[in-house]
Amino acid sequence: MIRITTTSVFVDDQAKALAFYTDVLGFEKKDDISLGEFRWLTVVSPSAPDGVELLLEPDQHPAVKPFKAALVADGIPAASFGVDDVATEHARLTALGVTFVQPPTDLGPVTIATLDDTCGNLIQIATRA
Image 1: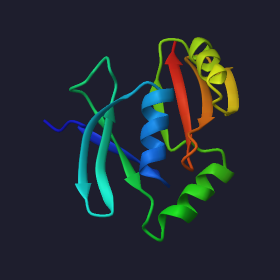
Image 2: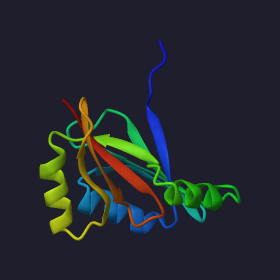
Image 3: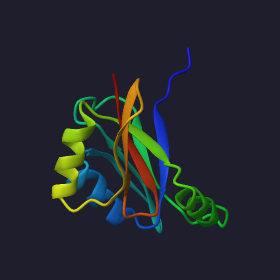
């Protein structure tokens, strides 16, 4: 059986990303292993500390920055995170200064909102009906 253990989001600054993903979004740091100039830096949901890890991966490969910019220009999120209630989470994050590029939007079976992660990505939050 194959299962997802780690997925990644490309970030322009690992320290800034760690602060945003932990202090603002509420994830917890899992691994922080020095690899020279960069780190193997993962975060997890506090409700699933042994669940899927999100790797805050440096965006240093030459193809990554144009790819990220194209996604942002087209309004395409780099990742989607589940929340219990999009409206409540939108209000909490807005109060913390998070910029949303799409407010809570009811799409029938799912409600979504899209935020700027300050690290070059759009991130979607979603609640299934």
